[in-house]
Image (cartoon, rainbow, N blue to C red; front, side):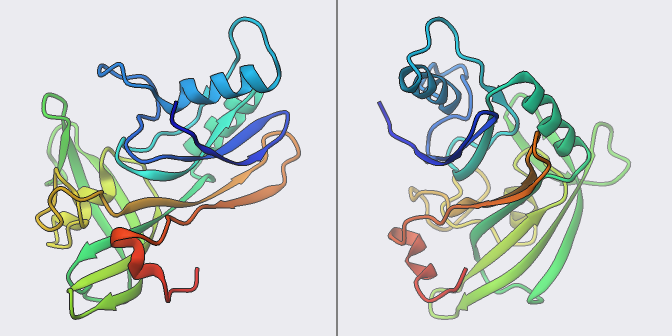
Length: 228
């Protein structure tokens, strides 16, 4: 079975690093998923008979790796889910994208519409039926002119379907290795990583920050001289 790294665990939550190309939860492919892996890990670690409760709080796209938190009790799950709804739960990503951004810091706002049949999203006009507002903030950490690629740190304000991928590609800054919305790096691993989670512990109320940095190989070698 694929291994995953445990970043933090107590009686209420478990924070792990999701491996790339593993679904967050079971899907129609039937491939092993992270939710099942976490359940199996806890079952084995604590020698628990029967089903183990693990609450899914948020998801990452299958090709994306990085920090995820799961709840170990229904009370913790309810409180963390409320933080997500109230936008207190912060998700910060690292991205390698095409080209040079117009400004070193900025905010992107768009209305996105999801095509359920194709499992894609696109930027549309505000009045489009079933469109949803998508907002993110970005900061440029590095621009490499020789290869015309930028490293961005992105704070999500909304959690729309494929949001970062769609918002960047609509401005000709597609993510390197993005097979659905990109042009460059075809066949490579997508350079999108869930770098940091900021949340309030569901029981102690303490604010906690969990971070994970991708291994500096392949596309991510570009991080070598960046202080995170």
